[in-house]
Image (cartoon, rainbow, N blue to C red):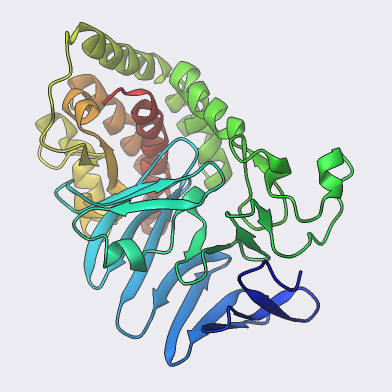
Length: 364
C-alpha cells in the first residue's frame, strides 16, 4: 500500500514502514534488529521507545517521559514526568480513562467501534491525554498520524484495516484471505496485539466468569507464572473457592439492596489489594512490607476500581481471603527471599484478576 488518500508511505525491507508524508508533514521511523520501533521523528521533534521484550516500557519526546507498568491484563499505570497515574479499561481492553492517586479522573477517551479516537476529555486532556500512547485495545497510538502501531504492522482505524499485508495467509476463514483485514472485520469480538493474529475477546470474558464461579483463574495464573510453587499451595487455594463465592454473593446482594445509586464524588478509586491499615489484613500487609519495595504502596498492590465496588469490598471475608492467598504464597517459598517475592507478586496477580472480574460486573 503506497498511500491512503491523505498519507503516502515509503517502505523498507519489504513491509516495514520507513516514512509517511501528507505533503506538509513527514514522519520518519527507525527500528531495532528485532523489528520493534525505537524512534519516531517529525522534523526536530523526536520520540524514543524502550521495550521489555515486545512490551513498551518507556517513551520520551525529550521533554516528557513516561514509564509504563503492566499486569496480566495489560496496562496498569504510567509514571508521567514523575507522577503516577492509573489506567481504567473497559471489558474490551480499551483505555477509557486515567486517574490520579486520589482516584480522580484526569483524562477520558471515547472511541468508535473500529478504534477511531472520537474525544479526549479531562483536566489533563492537553498534556497527559495527548502524550499517553496507550489507547484503543491498549495499542500504541500515534496522535500525529492517527495510526496504531501493533509491533509488526500499523492499523488505520479510519479505514478499519492495516496499511500493510499480513505475512501469513489464514486459510481457516474466507476473511483470512484478505491480508489487510483487521480482526476478520469484527472489531467488537476480536483484538490483535501484534498485527499477526486476531484473538477472541470472549476468551478473556469467559475466563473472568470462570474465576467468579470456581476460582480457577487464580490456580491457572499461579501455575503459569510460578511452576515452582508446591502442590500444597494449589490445594490451599482450591479450599478458598467457598470464600471467593461468598465475597461475590455479598457484593451482589449489597448492590441489589441499594434502592438507587447515589452520585459518587468520583467514578473510580485506588484499591489496595492488601489493605494498608485494616487490622484483619495486617498479616498480609506485613509480608508485603517485608518482601516488596514500597510494601503495601507497591504498584503491584494497587488497582483502579469503581467507587461503588470499592465501598463494598473491604469486608472481613475479603481480608481473610487475601490474607490466605498471600500467606500461602509466602510460606511456600520455604524461606528463600527471592522466591518469596516472586510468589507474593503472583499472589497479588491472583487477587487482582478476581477483583478485576468483580469490577467488570459492578454497576458503579
